[in-house]
Length: 204
Image (cartoon, rainbow, N blue to C red):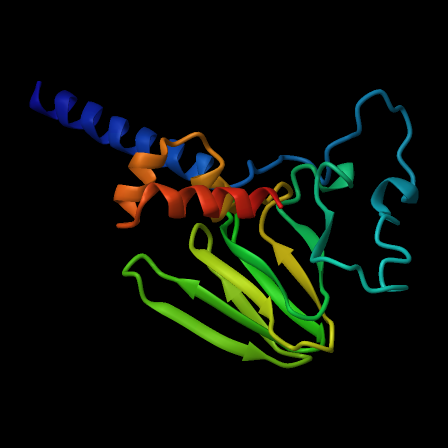
């Protein structure tokens, strides 16, 4: 009887461990690729994404992330990879954010970028990247990128270990989420007027 009980506990523990692993990343697929819905034929165009053509022709006026994820490129379904081209005009940034679905690997093509991440012990790691440098952002950690140069734009490519790597940006998640101003003021050890100014700044 003890052996049966022990076996049941082991099976339960293994089942829980397996279910957590499945939730932590994209699901594995059992085929080479996932056949597109409503299609009877697949050719090379299915495996080709042209949505990044022309994005380097001009520098945007504000920070811009152009994604090649599952939403834009259906062939990524089940492949656990995606891309984004990040364009930083002078004096712009991608504010602190997290990616709960995947780690990110940033490769700087042009300009310079200050990057930083905060680990779970609240230790900040920063680096100034030059063209050809790479920086890893572990999954789930708060991080940012900033082009501090007042004249030269910066361009980077980010690769992700998920076909749908969501970005959860900290300022709107906190200040545009509907949390009461008094709660925010107490949380940040400031006053309600300051919280209202921050909220107003996010909408401008």
